[in-house]
Length: 400
Image (tube, rainbow, N blue to C red; front, side, top):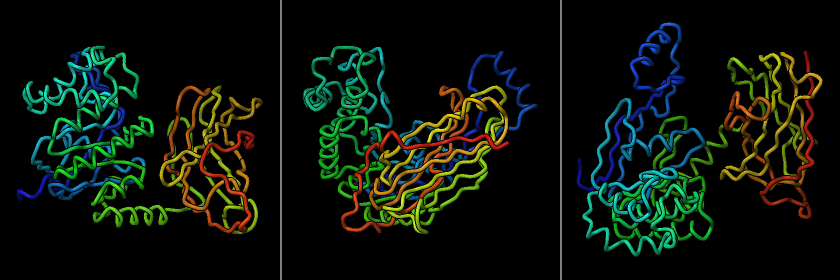
């Protein structure tokens, strides 16, 4: 591999088998053999023949919709999991922060975990000691540095984990969306530190739905969609391609087959409440039709509306009317979002079906996207993204 290349991925694929339990006992293995004969194994392709090269010193933003394969790719690059197919070549030490607690032992103190991570990166105790005070100061957990990290809050965990990953001088730094756990002040510190790391010629891979941060920090970008790398270029070009991708997938109705043994989605539609064009001032009428396959089970559905930057602007759970809540059959749920509550821009819905407000029966991520045109007059009132009014009304009807 060329000495200027930090990471080279060639035809990387990752396939998961769904519904298979991992248990090393002999009894479970024998039971599993019997079950396999009576069960068709379902496979899910998280990555599909992804190829790219990242040069030394590049700061690369990896962007894409939820479920595009971003986190899976980072786990492969961090050597946490192996690809099903393909080859990856890496030059240099990698420090990664993919989720809360990655690389930390919960029973060890913050101090002990700092030295443990340094050892994993191939550093001597003396080298880690030289960075120790700087790490603790950056993390802001000095009062708890000799406390087992299992007692840390998620924010403390992330602050210390990031400080360790960024200060132990890896050649390659990999950061996932986990930074969203920290407060805004700490996120600014993290972005500043990543810029500092990049300015020293280190390679940084950064996954985030915060496209403003990606544009400010990164010089390169990779766009993933449904497990494939669909674009690679400058950060700004990649963000523009991501917007185009979202626009090309915009739809006003969904009839895609979402079905399992519990629920069958029949249709999900969003229409303007007035006029023929969905706009800031038109308002939205929403209709969901689905079949409940479960007898004696109260089904609930949750609507979640997000901006293209993954900011939640609307979250509402809806329950089937009490009289028919436990009947098998088809249900229709209708609702309305009033006009002048959203800014112009791109949005998408997540849809979740549950039972008795406890168990998730089916999740439909990014099921429908739409664009709000800014057609309100200059005096039209538009609410900034935030949780919408709680009195928004949804009504359920048992059809048959």
